Every structure is written in C-alpha cells, then in structure tokens.
Image (cartoon, rainbow, N blue to C red; front, side, top):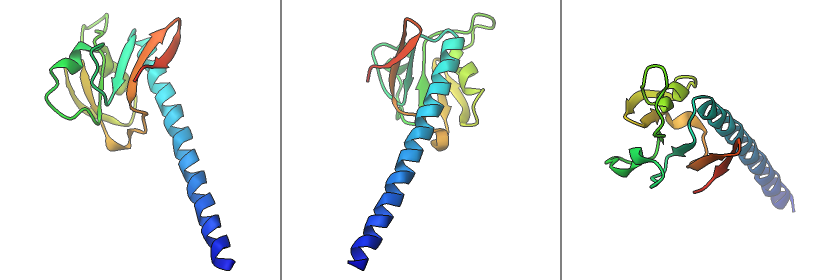
Length: 124
C-alpha cells in the first residue's frame, strides 16, 4: 500500500507540472498572437506547413522552431513576423522572407492560427 501511495503522489506531482507547463505555453502563445495582431498579421504558423501562408510553401527545412507569416511591416517593408519575434526572448535571430527562427525554449503551441473578428482561431 505504501508503494501505491508513493507512486500516486509522484504521478500527481508530474501531472501538476504538466498542467503548469501547458498554462505557461497557452499564456506565451496568446502573448505572441497578440503581438502578431498588433503588427497586422492575420494568419501565422508556429512550426507548421500550410497553404494559407506562402512563406511555408517552398520552405526546404524542418518547420519546427520556426514561425511564418506573409504580411510585411508597413514602415520598413521587412516581414512583420520579424518584428514580432524581436519582442520575445525566444527570438532565434535568423529569418528568411516570411519565416523567423525561434529557440527550443519558446513554449509556443504549434499550429496555424487565423485572426477573425479580432479573435485568434487555431486551424491546424
């Protein structure tokens, strides 16, 4: 019985840690998406290929640790996704067109997100 209780306690601690990690990832993803919205981005991909974003179509590398969007910054015409990633400590400091790398510690939830009526929706 003692072993069962110890195992159960360990599993509860692991579950709580997982829930906390998920909460942190949800918060970080929401903050990231809000910055995308501020920069005029309407569709963004986190680690996924999608026909909705041209920048992913010919991407020859792994999609992990990358974010994608097609919109350009209105002032200096650079990809708007670069402006967004510059605001976070997980900025991977390298970008190509509508792509920007992010570090492993980004704690973002992969997917394709679309802004509609002021709200973000996960499409993939």
